[in-house]
Image 1 (tube, rainbow, N blue to C red):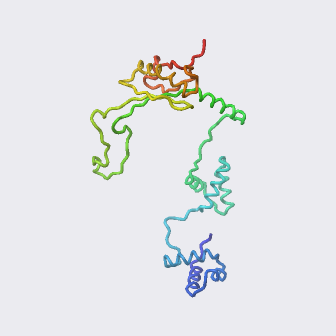
Image 2 (image 1 turned 90 degrees about the vertical axis):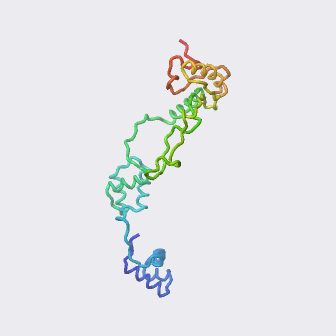
Image 3 (image 1 turned 90 degrees about the horizontal axis):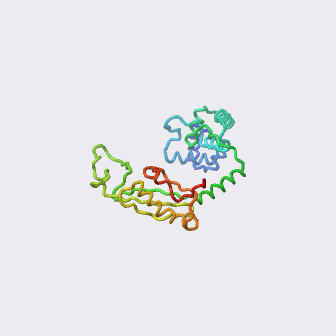
Length: 258
């Protein structure tokens, strides 16, 4: 809404001082009653009715104008800045391209190059989803992890003043030789989780192969919904360290016949 002149605001204040009500002032001066109430509230709180100094130049786009731009972009993500300029001008808020772009950035919308994807019909999407859901039920995922018994390996950020880097509250306590750790191996699938196996000693390719031999088929039945002893169609692992050794090619995955 257009800002009222200082003279008109003074007249509203004067009439209010003389005892007139909001409705009577609104009818006499042709000003909305909500605006009259707002000016009087400001006068009671701050004193003068003049416009107080603002922090920086007022924004070119109003909140309503910014929301309108967001609605246009949400409906049509391919709209250009030139077209948005025309929309803004029709609403009576002519703005530069940079102004419109900054307003969209504040709303979390950024200009990016569109990715290319194969054109799929609903039939294709349904078929792909069904295939992936069927295949997912036949896959067994496994991984190992090392857990420290004391402290954390991850970095921690703290708020501190200069010279307090070694204060107790801003440091992470450690112990000699790391405090020990345990290594665990586990697996899961669409049907649930399998047994959690503790690895004793240092893991190598032969030990990892023994873990797979002893635990993979045992977990395949209850987790992948296969009869006991039947091999899953696929086994997924990270292929890091011992898992990438040729000796550790998964013995439980059904191999295609030659």
